[in-house]
Length: 445
Ligand code: ADP
Image (tube, rainbow, N blue to C red; front, side):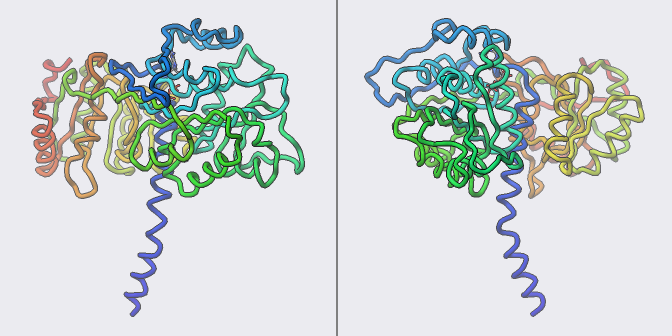
């Protein structure tokens, strides 16, 4: 009976966990992805547009001038180093800036210019003379809200009359006060409280409602519901905008509840390929030998920046220690670190302060590492059943289309089992993974 009781408790407890894990995971991944890149994702794909009114003309712009932005905002855009609208911005911006305002659901992968687009729309629509909130933007996490806030501050640099406030947990306001800032950005729970319970915001005066990262949003229990409750308080003519990197059925259902009569813009993710990548494997007998091989590789070739993936935290920690003992500047990204710590590590790596980033498979699952020229699988990616995780392998090693820089991937093999995994990966992609002799590294480079 004791056994049964234990089982019952385990089963009972296990239920809410996946939610927490998933939401923390996707929220953190999304943030880290934003931080690791500092430019646009290139894409050759065309946007797909579904207009609310198919008979109305579809405008798209090739320059920011064509948008007739306020001069202060044009200055802000150019000040950020943007020369022309990104693929998604070409169509999304005219739609969002049209009169009367149009509702929009837009989907494209991270790094294609969605945030910059809706920030420009919010800044264009506010009236700085009115000292009350006119735009609400909800983000799935505290960190993502701050990140978007930074973009608002940068783009609004020459438009200082427009003010911004964060509706995030911990930002306590005096009871009964009314916000004067024109833009409020925050997480759904606090935003909802500020609109309804505390009445810091008069929702009836909102002109633009933005819901960012819808796919991350729905991974957190309660966010969907809170977002819908905020949306219901807004006036009928409020512009509703929703953005997402992916578009599964569940995201789409949610999007339709947030955005009535939407225009829809989709930009397909650029296919990743292994065509421009040289793939190698190194045969070893232990993790010490793998480390030795890695040292040899480092001794033989110049590596600008490399990312090294390990299966466990323990291995990652050990490897980072060994590498730094050899004099390498190493950054370690590990699962037990707080999101802010992880963000700081990623930013330092992006800025080139460290040349090697060691991380666990889990920790960096969805991170785009396009700018890294060398990827090392210290352990091969496997799924929870021990089968090759081909998708992760491709995402980690692969590069997109014809923009792909040439890259180098090195896989460390230390057992029959991992050799078998390697063969299966090779078979899956039908691309040869060459054997590398780390005592004779002439062939590489
Ligand atoms: P998303 O929200 O889709 O992830 P972002 O708006 O964050 O994309 O843009 C990704 C990166 O590209 C950011 O560093 C941003 O500053 C930059 N960026 C956005 N729009 C442009 C543009 N039109 N020209 C150049 N860079 C841009």
